[in-house]
Amino acid sequence: MKKFKCTVTRTDEYEIEIDENIINEEWMEHFRSYMYGFDELSEHAEHLAQFQARLGSEQDFIEGYGYVTRDGELPYSHEDFDKNGNWLPEAERRQPTPGINIKIISEDNECDVDVEEITSN
Image (cartoon, rainbow, N blue to C red; front, side, top):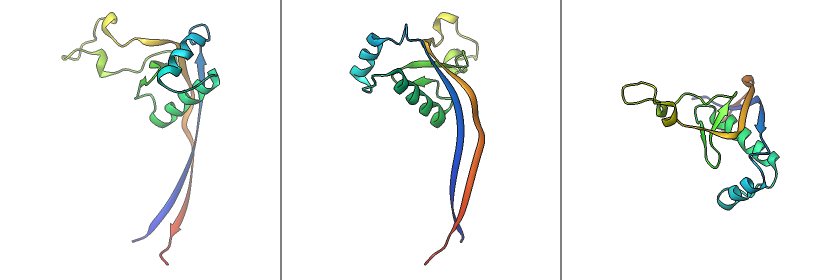
């Protein structure tokens, strides 16, 4: 049986939009009390970008942040429908976290794969 080591390098690009009037020092102090010791908005941007790259838009709830919009909208979820498949009233649907948006510039467009055959000694 032949084996191959495949190294995949992918380039995603996002603009993480954070409203500093909402995600302010008081908000960050509360966040630090139960999540990570982030002191700068750039640390939140990095964390959100990593989350998006790893899990994509299917995972719309981001622990510590709530339901985060992508390109200004919440991705659809089964949680927004009743048992018969009808939309729930707006007030009963998931509500996006104010002050945070992930603008997707490109995902998965650039993907390089290096392949190396693994030989047995």
